[in-house]
Length: 273
Image (tube, rainbow, N blue to C red; front, top):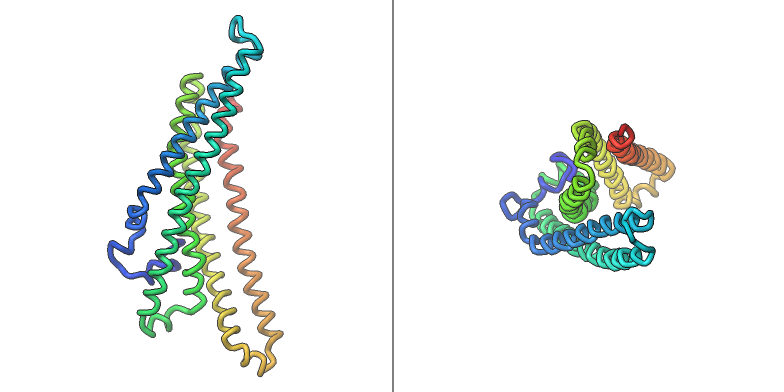
């Protein structure tokens, strides 16, 4: 959901059963299994990091009396762990992504049931195009949040713990230095998040207006043809479509800028040491 003004929340009935947290709780076993798969994935990746170090030390003679044959064992283990990591990674996506899709399915069913019971005053206040946008685009955002979003949140926690374990074991001082940019990263991320929220809201609004225009013209296609206003209608559609394209590109540019900027800031400690 992008905002209170443009989301499915005002349409759905109130109460604990309509809260997103209730859906998440119902699918908690799936998220738990997905989390376990992600934990196994990070453990495998952690061991691959250590085996890589062992293989490199062996190849460059950092381990006394080690031979090239000794580098084969960590290489074989790394291959096996990579296969295991691939399997559990796919399994984690199946558990988390399918939970998000099922939540979207259930909310869509409740949304349709609610729309059937709402009075005429609601439909005078909200256009058909906006309702269609909320029933499609907004629900897609909910699916992304409850699927991809939750999976990433779980994975970030495990990945951070795994990375810290390796980093601290290698060099506590460099680990401390690498965290000096965390406050700056938090400020940058907060700034980007606010702008992304505003632009996403604008995209949803323009999509709702475009959908409303298309729906009304399709419903009144006989009137459009009878009065011969096809050219004018097509021109208005092009203008609204261009406006939607522009707002979408603005959001895409912001997203494209966010990751290089945060990546560059995160890399500052390594470039100064």
